[in-house]
Image (cartoon, rainbow, N blue to C red; front, side, top):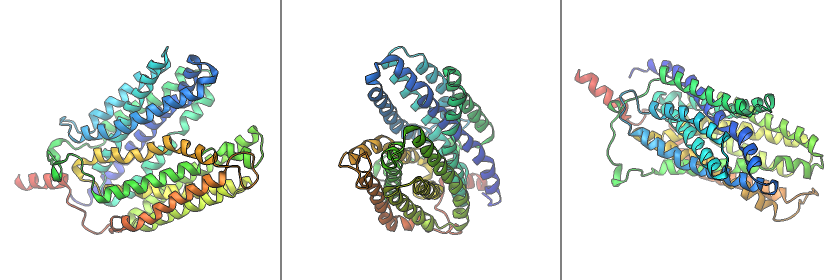
Amino acid sequence: MPDAVAPVRALRSVPFLAAVNLAALGALTAPAVVGLPVRVADLVPAADRAGTLAVIIAAGALAAIVANPLVGFLSDRTRAGWGRRRPWMLAGAVAGPLAAWWLLSATDLFTLVLAWVGMQVCYNAVLSTAAAQLADTVEERWRAGASGIFAAAAFLGTLPPLVIAAALPTQLVLASAIMPAAAVIAVVLCVLFVPDATVADIDLPSRSPGGRRFAPAPGFTLVWVQRLLLQSAFSLTTAFTLYFVMDRMLRDQASATSVTSLSTVLGGGAIVIAAVTMGLLAGRRGDYRPFLAAAIVGLIAAALLRAFAMEHVQLWTSALVGGLAMGAFFAVDFALALRTIPAERTGAYLGVLNATETIPQVVGPLAAAALLATGSDPLGGRGGDYVALYVTAAAVALLALVLLRFVAPYARRPVSAPAPEDPALRGREERRHAS
């Protein structure tokens, strides 16, 4: 494929796929913000609401961990004439609103759990195939920039449900339907305008080396573990921020909410800005090591700043530094992972990679609560041991920094170096010469 085509493909594919990522995550967030807590409150006594909601969310997270790689695996082997990814993406987007309606109309807990699990399966099908299609259509040299835009869209996707919930607090059905409808529109546009390789374009070996269908390469395993460590450290760093402000800074709930909200905005905005800008810079450089190192060191600094913060300015600084760090990490991590993934198994591998985002969401709050329970705040706060919590987050990030030494060989390949042979390109070249 001529190099001149690569910018055209990237520019055409990335905005549509980023829009799918934003809308699908928004569609999945909307019920969690609006519908799910209300339905739980309608169905169980007040004393049982928190525990019931936690169990339902955990069940949905488990469904996401299973659905993401499973749909990716199936899409890798789909033989539809109009593409490998499109059928699954479209099916998930169309079934998602039905699952949302089922959730809102549930009259018992069992139905509510099934509906929430169904929503997770549907929208994770959309998310996993969108990520795989991004890998399929964007060339190596443009992947870091595309990765940054894709990651920024994911974080922006959580904002519309919050705005909708605030604007339509009494319109539960309407508030929950807007983002699923947006996801359908985004996916339809993606199906119409983003190319999708058919099975004829890619050689699909029946088995991977060694006779196993999924045999992670050492490079992918290293990247997976490093990503899990960074996501876990970030989850611990941002855990229980509202309680932290109330306990450490001795503020009432109203003022603590304002401080926490600004912290969240600063951190989220920093992630979006850093993901886009660092992705573009990393794409030009081709060497991801400086970006990974800066991201990990930045997250360590953010965790330590928060551990000893006594005033809201220190908290906001921590949020800003942590957001910039994670944005830089997200900008290159997806592109780095793709360097370790066989092109013919992109969907399955990316599905396994996405588990590193879901696992900390489940385990992080439990680990944070356990760390807080180890003692009282050494700096005189009213709550648990926040120093232990945030220093542990820094230690987890430090493990990721140690692992960088082993990830470095995959991160340092310059963009001008020849990429590993791509079965999709090889197949097309052979057919072109044969004709």
